[in-house]
Length: 451
Ligand code: SAH
Ligand code: SF4
Ligand code: F3S
Image (cartoon, rainbow, N blue to C red; front, side, top):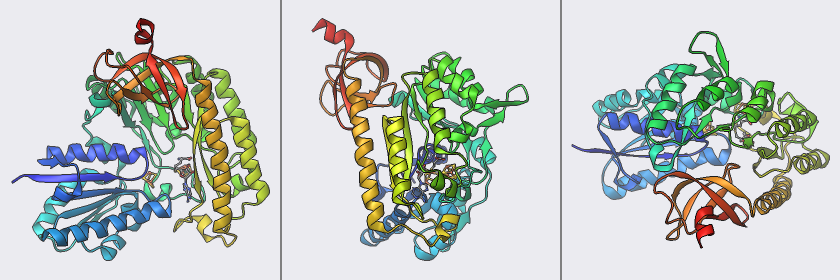
């Protein structure tokens, strides 16, 4: 009997990585992937708890699956994994009785065992697995999937967070900081490169807090790990995300100067430009500290493109606080960035505060911040027109002859007249010919010269 599954992931790249690992585990257990829930015997919803909207998505999806079961006159298995599973546990099957399994982000290696037990219960009752055992989870990872298709792959090196920013659920959903041993990471990187990866993005909620066991005893920092990865033959590009300003150490800054494989792009969230708000957020640095880091990083790597995350409307944020955020954005000049309205999360200290910023004010501030960030992104894209850059072409573009990929500075790019380039993922020299709001266009340098 064939057993089919479909996984939907919400949230961050670490969930994407986890979904790939779950797919490997299920396939080793005899399950076959199908594209959508309609035809699946098992649906896995890999969830995110970071903001209220993200967390609520799972319940609308569960409602849709219930309706689908009813229409099709069957009872498919449903597993809720990821950060909502960790945060809400037993509450999920109470609200949605069609859920068979609730599995936190550190327990997904138990999927086959739990599915087997669920089959014996024949659709009645459910199981909840939300223990923290990051080590066991990674121990089960085999990894080689997908890397060859696009030439780029994620590799989780660190999980969890001990920072406890006052707005954030991650320390509760992903648990304490855990760094994987360097030898395991190097082995996984070799498998990914053998499977076709030209680029690896090292992942962690606080990736630059990495401090894993070194192959020869002792500990490696992220900078040391990057240097070791840069030695792997065939691995052309390295990136890492997401970083915390407190963990940008001098050796990491130096890595941006010394490792040509380390791409000139850094996602370094700051959240706010106001010292009072930063303190209330428990970020443990001031706006000036961040600006100094950016200056150090740019001294090490002058073409470094900056990205960040911002929260507007944190409780107590005044007009002056918000103006300080706009000032910081103007001082940095971002190539791109993400910005969010503050969303109170159950169990976090900030959610207890009674000086919430009214919704219309949040909306107004978000619009103003996004207008500024979009303007900066457009200017950044315009400044790259005319440059020749090595572009990782990951996949076919929408039009014939077109290929899509990323510039070193992480800009999305469509390359026209790419039909004569070698097939498959490849790094090619491309001249940037036009800038758009969220991407750029280009032409292969050799084809352009021939034309
Ligand atoms: N580890 C990263 C961020 C992880 S969460 C860091 O330290 O910066 C990704 C982003 O979601 C955060 O940077 C923040 O901007 C946003 N975020 C987290 N909690 C939020 C909340 N309660 N409301 C709105 N945005 C939030
Ligand atoms: Fe959340 Fe702060 Fe940890 Fe980032 S550093 S994951 S924002 S608690
Ligand atoms: Fe969301 Fe969990 Fe990632 S809350 S952002 S999926 S760590």
